[in-house]
Length: 437
Ligand code: HSE
Image (cartoon, rainbow, N blue to C red; front, side):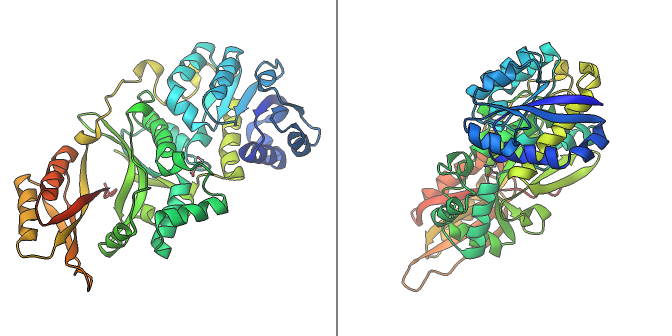
């Protein structure tokens, strides 16, 4: 029987899940791979907890470098997160000729280009299925299952925390801050929820998907990122009245001018399956030129769902550890010398349809003024909703859905609308995607 010796960095939620799945399903995993995958060493700050979980079956240390320098370890599983110590450890493991499995999306989005170059030079595997959408095998689908396609776009609900918050806001009519508190109490949201609610976590995952969908380097710094903190209950309700749901989407789209790479709240038609992905679940839609739109759904976080992806990567390492670079699927799905430095478009250059909400004095001619501005900019109106002013108010909400235009053009229109004397305050702008074709 062949063996693969694993060194585990971190045995917290995902590390504990990984250990449990590897142990519980050991016989099934060996039936599939023909290899016995054994955790031989674990590093964790909480040594006592690590010893309890492993029950004396693996060496335990609080020194992560002892694992990456251990000659008996074939593959290092990095589950400690962050991107300073983890980067040092991953690069050291690679330098020592060890394969690496990581769930660390921030590390790969920021330093993936350097890590993959180092791994290529040492002919070791760096596998990262768990870094995007937890248990959903979206990396495998993009890199292998859809390999025949020219991938046109990817759009995903890739942050469970924000999807939980948006679902609660819609179903219970609550404000963002109230639901955030509930999400923190339930353990969905971190004590510092910035990465999740500001869309940064989703942008990390989107960056990785764009790289393997289009064969381009990681360009996290150029991704446009807008979170859900400013989203108002009124917009969720108006969207619903018009047949749409608002989701935090990560969108990567290949256009003739360059790649759109953007995370923001998005109206999507409620009839789309992805619009009905609720709670903390994740889903990714991928459009390939041959296959059309495809949908992948599942748990994007959690101990065993994420472990499912980590262990699948370990099984790939078990099968391919002695293969040459040519026999393996390339890190970014495309041959390293074909990875193309595609330009990422500034948000002003992207094309989208828009939801606009304006507050206007209830006087004759206001709507005519607004529609003239849009018509002069060649922005076509798709639908409109005007609400009566509340009893004690003289201002009304007007909601407009536009057809597709360039964002720069839309912003010129919004500035002109806001300058109209009858318009009160700022115009709310939310992008819309059909996700149909
Ligand atoms: N914080 C992430 C989420 C889970 O809320 O989806 C890990 O990627």
